[in-house]
Image (cartoon, rainbow, N blue to C red):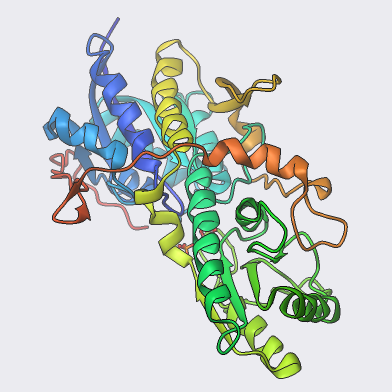
Length: 420
Ligand code: F6P
């Protein structure tokens, strides 16, 4: 078997465990030296591949690569950049082939969400469309948990855990002071069009009266009157009300409550800032003192409280991607398959990239209670195992000890540069 190099890249919003997938890819490739030469990483996702800005991961020690497993965010840099169609943007693909060919790259691993799998799918077609023999495997990632086929997406379980832990803790805080101070606490969480993250906060409410008392989902159009009525009932009954709101909550006419007016390179409207809008609504109508918080990047970088299940799955998917490539597979994404039995068990399956790309899976209606304000037992059964277990990073001087890689650039071989 001829030895070729591999290129690994991270794409889209980063997570607490995307580096665990990178660790799975690199460690597995290091064990297959008779088949894969070097693993290069593209700096800032596909942009690094286009601009020939490659990182030589073989210069990183085994210990540093192992430490990626417990280090959050994207160690090689990520991006939001979508490749156009091969027909209309042929130059981009020809450039990729030039870069791949110059560096003897025949394996490409693209670690991202739905939009990024579109890029992976297009790259996987390079053999067919432009005659360059490349094996391309997508590796799933997204805190939004909205990828199809896979039972859940790496990154989600850790955000879910962070959000459930946070609302439980903040709920206790609000309850302590409610008699004379704050009565309403609002936590805003990410998730864009799907309510999975908001839903996971519901796991914290195990008994009557526990936070969160109300969850606002993107799947349920916001009804201000019903919401205010519920807040008032909660305050009267429990003395306080803890609310989790998804950034993707929208009005009855479909417009986002929190739209900032900005659009990213994938065409998504930038969201964020719904919590203060909801807080003002409560204050104006009910007069209750409030606090609000945005989990924002804290939630997706919170590796200190990552879910053990999530870390294990992220690693396993990275490892599986290399194994599948070496088994001759192309244009697929390894996925998590949940066993049907009572006890939570999972294994790795695979899904075709062309069917994964650009699909967003919302919460099923029967995961949300009839009144639209909480999660059902079916949802609880689905979510619970995903936040199971802790995988604490090592600590030094009271802080988590994360690795910073050397990220040494590979010498450029092409004379031409490429404008993005
Ligand atoms: O990648 C998904 C996500 O984390 C969404 O939940 C969130 O809306 C978005 O990314 C934020 O993107 P950015 O960091 O590019 O503003």
